[in-house]
Length: 118
Image (spheres, one colour):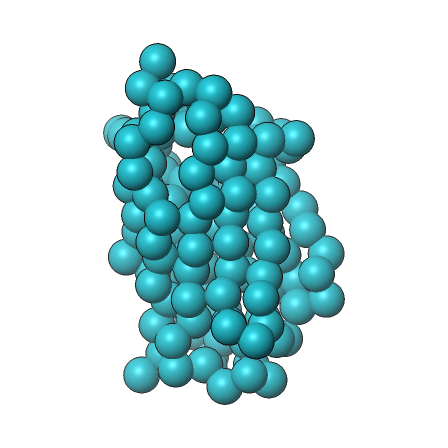
């Protein structure tokens, strides 16, 4: 069974940092290495929005709201994707979800909660 499992959320003060991790369980290496991986953010009462994306070749893309503050990366050997979040703001509060399209379907993790206190 393939699944995405996020971790690393928590409570942090504004201006602080967190590092989120997403492991792609059950993926064979070739599938993970080719897959575009993404992080989405869902703020309370709002729709889920794309935060950052990384291709299998390592090309990255970010939402304007996080450019210069967040960094997405991947570790092929461990089949993990990371989101380094620096200079956190209160509006970064919410759930963060890992996402990819693989094995013929869209996959989402269960989410990890981030709370930024001002």
